[in-house]
Image (tube, rainbow, N blue to C red; front, side, top):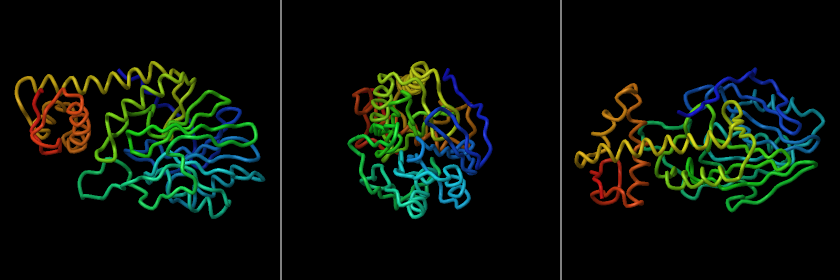
Length: 297
């Protein structure tokens, strides 16, 4: 069982001091993909970095600026291009003059009219400074290391705050829920590799963009990995009875889940199928896709 952390004390628009170097303001955009809302982090004092300014919400912009009177924003830092993370970067840059740091998506997803698995994409996201290959940014008394963590999206970055041995984990690891992996931009193989890389860093705290901090980091990541493996084991066990398509397996493997969520479960299963095919565990009739027939290799 994943030891979810779901209790969080907050008020929308209020700035909370979370640690000596970290403050947070939560946007009023609760929902099925955002939990209580987007948590925008402010790192440092006097000259600060703002991590994931959030959705295009003028009230949230004013709340961020009200939290730093007399201080200067020197870095606007983005974990990835989803619409609950990056759209406000442009307005914050216009008000502060700070450049935007992050990683652009090489091939943005298109809206295919299918089931929505996320809050949407910020198709116009273009950082001023690319951190796709990693790198460091710094201010007085703080240093952030960009760590490429593809999986949830191809351009996802986490940021380690060296002075506090903590990580701003974006949507890569969330305390309240598992992370959505939706092909083609989401990739299960990359995601599992990124999880293992973060686990080995030995961070003392994870600060997700949505929800409360994770303090027991290694056990939490171990449970995250075990959950993904359990889902893949369910697939291989089901396919031991014979070839099947995703649409055949979802009602069986997600029988305890509201049927309205089965289309979303199918997208998640597709990510697992692609991964297992790469690993040589499964075979598909042609390129693995949502309508392919899968069998044990």
